[in-house]
Length: 126
Image (tube, rainbow, N blue to C red):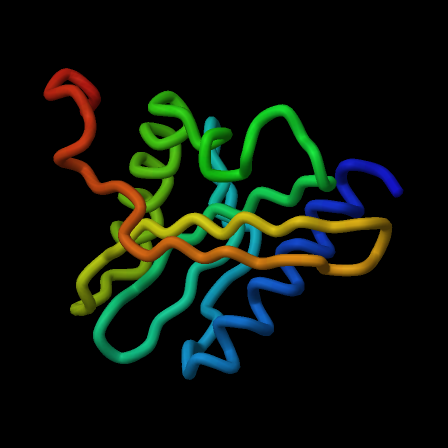
């Protein structure tokens, strides 16, 4: 299984998880120059910008650790572009989903709501 296939499988699992929790998936793989958001979903209260990290068991770095401050900055910038293009009255939130896969089998899905926000970034980020 390629890394791209692994990522797509992880994203599919997280989209199903969010749907089961009552979220509506607005977009998948929203891209701008210099950034991508894996899943954008809303539940009537929040618009969640979700970064999905799929890993194999025993990976050196967890999915949560893989979302570095540089990656967070890109996600924030991409979310700003999305909200500029598609204004929303909902509270934005940045979530991370860590999916553990063995082949095409999902072994574990850990979901962290409000994993970071704009206040976590240095003031010169924007």
